[in-house]
Length: 391
Image (cartoon, rainbow, N blue to C red; front, side):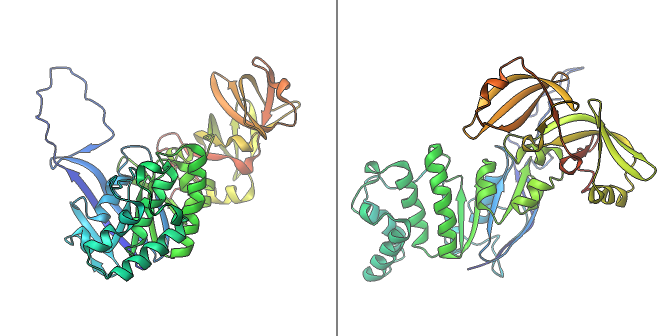
């Protein structure tokens, strides 16, 4: 068991492309990756303290640096700058095999010619453990993962979910200080992913070990992590519990990435009059609750044009008044309907209960909607930061 500490970790890949002479008046190419004289910066000043036995999820879009960070912890990528500690030991120059970590990959990486038992026992035999200890560890791991009945089978005779259990079992038998998981469920279908998410939560509770998990799926991040780390372009955007990140996103990117369907956005105006705040959008004037008033006042926030965010589940239909819109698409999701509404030339999504009302929301139907000030998020037009959480 061990805590993991990353201090200002940076990863720079040498820029191997030859510099091309730029033609006169040729525009600069836009890239999300920062390119310096040293090379391409994949991870920038990443600092994180992971407590012993904590479940941390690194989440973000493809290319944000999350897998690179995981591979640096595993020792599969060299750290360009910064320090990595597992327990109290500096790990920058320690070989992967000496870090007492176990990694589960997106691909199952099982030996196809070996049985499940042999796959689970392989690393233990490499370390020349006694045969009886190997057998005990293999059968304990198989029992935890409910794959005892498959020990004599080869990987080709297993389903995707069973193969992933074997891959996880191969990590368990090593009794590592830290489990690293790099998008282990991405190859599974939706039903199996849901099932395996629950199994991984149970596994963490049983093993009581530090887990560091990488995914681009915000649903996995929200359901698995004690805390989640949202990344973009090699930088940490926000660290917090799933509820904290969902309720108080620090910027527009986090607000749109976490939550499904994603947050809706309106052009709006934040108005401060006589020391009190309200927002105006689409002809609607929305008063703000006291806690939002206090946070805005604590930063002496001036009146300004803003981007107003509101989650689909916080918008309600209105008989009269409110914001007018036209139904474009009604997605039946079982217990609810996702309505795609056109408002002022942009799409807004709201969620309404089904309750046999599917015929009411045909394309072209005119509706009105409303929302309360308690549920709005106010973002600066210039910095895209949440005005309530500017620190």
